[in-house]
Length: 207
Picture 1 (cartoon, one colour):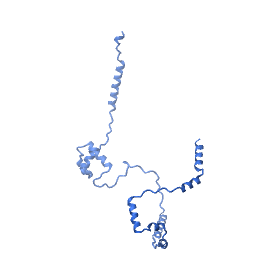
Picture 2 (cartoon, helix red, strand yellow):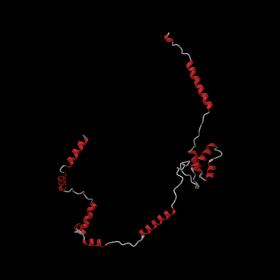
Picture 3 (cartoon, helix red, strand yellow):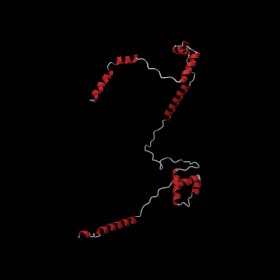
Picture 4 (tube, one colour):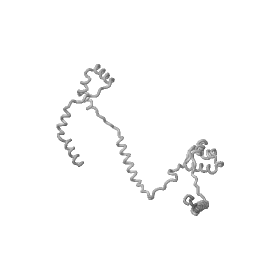
């Protein structure tokens, strides 16, 4: 049903299209949009200086046309030739080298912290590995690793180190004792058994 309706709509739109197009073309042209006052003032000043300015715009200037025909550009620069020579030399050098393909095709291993650690560390900076190490050292032995000692050790500002130690902590893994866990489970089982073995008290209202 939808295809039939679309086919009928297409034919209705194309019916007598040429005559309708001519009627639209023969209509009066729409009025242009109003101009700004500043543009009108500029046009008035231009017409005062040259009343035939509009006629000159609509006419073809033969002098300008001949000048445009006489204008041409010649270049003596060998830039393109030099670029082509350099490209040909580079291609010849690549052919001479004939670099062999890599023999090892396995995927390289990922880095431990997700990025390649720099070999040289600037003063006032530290890597993620160093930060985790001195945070962990401070958590385990705060008296042995205070903020001042860490700042001297890693060449950092003491205020920065204090902020790092205050706002960042490493996770601690807690593994409960299995014996203590078994004891809690047995105590819970004993309580459940006592509740099950406890005799029920008869209701006095039923007697």
